[in-house]
Length: 254
Image 1 (tube, rainbow, N blue to C red):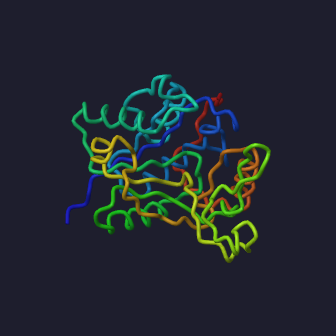
Image 2: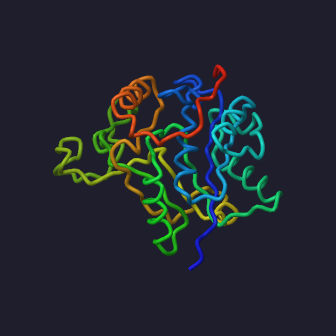
Image 3: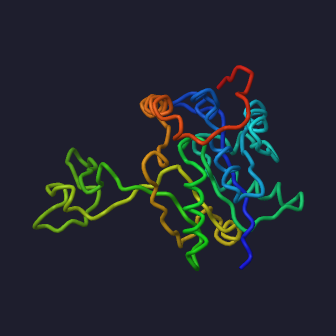
């Protein structure tokens, strides 16, 4: 069987609000996106690693660490509410215009710095070994169960999930008695490129789960996440992908 061709996309827009400049903020000496690029390159699964960004400076940083930047993302695709499908279509289109087409694409977000090549290999084996799927998405078991979540309507609490049995509502049950629920994390996604054209989405409707383990699913999206990532990186530097390039020499701005 012929191995499918694949491109890795590392999205890194500027303008993060909760952790300013997080995609290029330094962790253990390197900008965060350096670890996504390093993990992708070390996996050996991708003929191309490309960064999607709206910033010339971020583009320079990505190139320094070995990624391509086929085009810059326009401001209209780089807002807080911009959907991923827009920049994915732009990147696939830019590569196709240069005669470079791929069977699959993977999204490796910079905010998961502890995702190593081994993680990507496990996900790839699951994706390519599961017939008929449109895509793969990384998930982990929830720690705060939606069965114990509420919405407020008219000054009253209503359960977010109105599915629990009346004789034993989920909000009054122990965690162990609740149905298993998983939440997506930012570690990785893999999809067949044709899904974008056929469904107008990056995932399609037939999605195989990939359960992340330990730190590989950590998503840096808040100051608390960042503090934890710094602690882990200091105490367990081997948890990060090895970055072969020297640290980017210039001062990084958000």
